[in-house]
Each structure stands twice: as structure tokens, then as C-alpha cells.
Length: 416
Image (cartoon, rainbow, N blue to C red; front, side, top):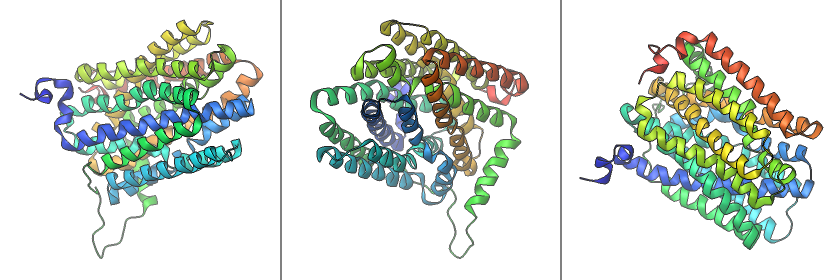
């Protein structure tokens, strides 16, 4: 008996496409996290401003508004083909950055410009990953597959953040970027082995459906389904009020609150990611028992409470432990949410619906830009309390407003 047959949690690896996709996504996620640590710290040190740091973080999500169009293009040319083009773009932009670093020509302005170009593409990477999983995986294995797929990002935040900080500390930015480019190229080669299927091919001689009409249909479909609409609101809320506190602003916490430097930042990021990884693994093994709708609400509320606690902790070691617990809660909020959207959406609508889902991520750059002035005017603690209080309040509002669709165990959203 093979390992994938004897271990239920590994069942998704029976699918050949997934055996290529998982390591390809892992390599991309490693590169993303290494770049985030390297460039985020560079901008903070060179500018000395939390406002510039938050502006830089927001730029990496610039392409969120284009995400629905990426889903529509993927429907036509195949998600695998589109993902290969995207990963080739990452490698090319990172190569430009590496040349600028080695020649001593890199400035914060150039870093912003390249981050802006990369930000047009990168936010849609997660959409393509989820769509490929939904396209190739049997419904009964979807929760487990999404849990395993999520481990690529979570484990990368653990290892990638530490590797990025460590390589810069030991070798410098230039050699560190050689590792980043290597990860992107490995990812591109592995992605070529993933199954490719254009969900809505345009027949020869027929008029192509308008991409704008496709996007309107995706928005209309989400609006008609109350449990999907409420989950989109929740996704926007956590991106607006929770993710900025454990993403871009952790560089500020490491430098100005704890005074632990770039390596310490790597450990803070890794702590949150380790908790998220453990949560993803738990969902991989026990996800079939989880009611998705109810779980997203409860886990989201716990996540906010833990972030408030973290904001008041003056010791980096204890703060890292609380961050790890927050990461665990975050997985139990976000993975069931993604499963719900994929499971309850017909195959020919998935590209459009997941594109709409990525619009919710636009809350993150908005939250980052709002947090910057608050941190500069007050401090991280006040900002975290304000953001999390708003998040908790509206999580309760969403739960009460759509109680019959999200909380009731007989609801579609809680089908297991």
C-alpha cells in the first residue's frame, strides 16, 4: 500500500497535477516571503518612516482590482498557462532588482517602482492556486487539499522569512536575491507539469463573451447567494483590520517596539506562520468534521482577541507565542472560507467568483494605508486596539445578519 493510500491526509497527492502544483506553489511562496522581508526592511531602514513602509506594503496589492480579470483569462487559456506567465514575470522583475543591488543603483524609489509592477500580478497568484485545486480535486478531498495547499504559504512564512533575514545578514542583499530568483525558476518548471484546462474555451467562429460581462456575472452570482456574499464581507473585513497588523506593520514592531532587528522580524513573522501552518495541518487531518460557515466566524473573533493581547505584550518571546496562536486561529478562519467558495460554486463560475474573492483582499492595502498615520500619530498598540475592535464588532454584525446562512448547522455553509 502506498503512503498516500495509507495516510488519509496525503490523499490529495494521489492526483498527479497536485504532486506538481504543491512544490511549485511552495517555491513561489518561499520567494514571496524572502522578498517581503528583504525589501520591507530595506525601505524601513532607508526611509526611517512607517508611512513609507505602509505605502510600500500597499503597493504589493495594487493588482487586486485586476484579479477578476485574471480569473476570466484563466478560464479561457487555462489556469496553468496563466500561472506560468505570472511566475516568469516574478523572476524577471526580481532579476532587475538583483542587477540594481549588485551595481549599487538601488534606491527606495526604484524599489517602489518594481514593487508596483510586481503588485499588478502577485495578488492573483493565490486565485490561480485555489482554482487549480478546485479544478483537479474530487469534492470529498477539497478541504484536505486546501489545507495542504495552504501549508505552502504558511511553511514559507516560517522558513522563507527566516531564510530571507538570514541570507541578508550573512551574504547581503545581492546574493539573497539569487536565492529568490532560483525559487521562482524552480516554481516555473514545476508548474509546467500541472494539469491545464481552459474551462470556457471559445469555439472557432463564435463571438467571445465579454470579460466585463463575465465579471458582472460573477458579482451577480455572489450577490444572489447569501452565504457567499456574507463570506466575501468577512474576507474584506479581516483583510482590512487583521492582516495589516501581522504583515507589513510587524517590521515596525520589530524595529521600534521590541528593538530586535531584521533577524528578530524574521522570527516574529515565522511565529505567526508556524501557528498558521499547524492550523492548516489540523484542517488537513480533521477538516471533514469542521462546519465551514460557523468556524470562520468563531476563528475570526478569536483571532482579533489574540491580536489585541499581542499589542499589549512588551516581551518579544511572549509576543511570538501569542502571534503563533493568532496564526492558528487565522487558518481556521481563512481555509474553510476558501473551501466554501470553491465547493459551492459551479466549475464554470469558479474563475469569476474567486476573482471577486480577490477584490476582498483590497481591504489589506486600504488597512495598511490607514494604519500608517495612526501608528505615526499614536502607536502600534492604539492602532491594533482600534482595528481589532472594529473587526470584532462587524464580525458579530455579519454573524447576526446572516445567522441562518452561516451559523445554523443545517445551513448550506455548514455542510460537511
